Image 1 (tube, rainbow, N blue to C red):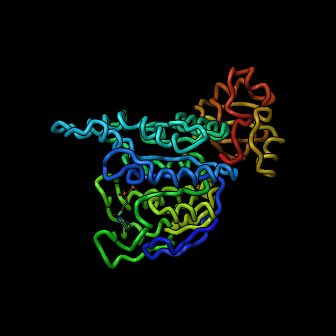
Image 2 (spheres, rainbow, N blue to C red; image 1 turned 60 degrees about the horizontal axis):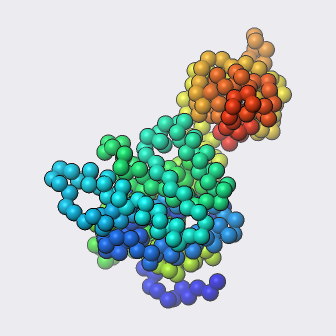
Image 3 (cartoon, rainbow, N blue to C red; image 1 turned 90 degrees about the horizontal axis):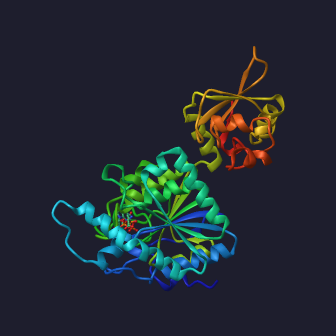
Length: 386
Ligand SMILES: Nc1ncnc2c1ncn2[C@@H]1O[C@H](COP(=O)(O)OP(=O)(O)O)[C@@H](O)[C@H]1O
Ligand SMILES: N[C@@H](CCC(=O)OP(=O)(O)O)C(=O)O
């Protein structure tokens, strides 16, 4: 690709390698989908969609988190909200504009686009969280492009995620993305908001959790945006906790967008400082144990500890107590008078289900239960050994 880096001023940012990735979440802010608050515009979406299409063609996976529903809806029925009803008006605008926003992505992408609307509740409730994860994996397997937004029409004030930067970080952890790409209307992070401080300097790379980064960030630059740099840095911190790097770049800059496709970043890299697996294992250690537990045979215990294998139903001898799908359960092995803790992990099946599939082959799960959530009861990535 021949990219003329000198074609456009870059706010002082030079080029650096983009961290390598196979699955990424791309967050696109309202300012990139709208033109001065006057409804949707494809101007910047076309370039971002081309980046997505090229990435898919190269065998990568991209999940889009897109804003713009409220801005689109506001332009469809421009009206002043009734006094005290700003929230209801915003929710109504979101309902009006959502379909058009997703339609815009579909217009610009040849692959089928799938609308996914999430609320804070969906992401806090472990069963719904796991189901959202399963749906997104299936969409990716089918070759669709998920376009996610917050379900603004049903999100109540105190439970709202409120900004799509944080939503994108949660989704990145949910789908175990390698990278969170945030497209916005500014070249990257500056030492202060350059729209108000002419001495602001570009920051090309910084640790996501460095308190200096958050101190630099100000609010939104336009009436269309929500949260400004602050929510982007919160999102980077959140992604870092899952071991995911974040990059910020200017989605209005066609050169910066094209560079991404060539594995180059002109913008800010926010480093996670730990690998995804290390972050996940650390997080798993912190999750409280459910009251139930699993007793496994010696062969299964050896496979878990020695080979880092997943726990299959065939190696489970007994189920103690009760737990739900998604709970953290303890795994033990050994004779009744000398059981030893072996590992702990997030179970794909409830206690009642495991009682029915214990000692059986994974291929029998579907016929025994009438459904299946995968061949393992606990996947190795969801497990830490004691
Ligand atoms: N330190 C900073 N560096 C860069 N931009 C900043 C900074 N502090 C505040 N901003 C503002 O953040 C804006 C981007 O956030 P926002 O308007 O919410 O965009 P989006 O719609 O893409 O989420 C920039 O246009 C800028 O005005
Ligand atoms: N869910 C809202 C977007 C909220 C939001 O975070 O906006 P932005 O800061 O522009 O990414 C919408 O679709 O309009």
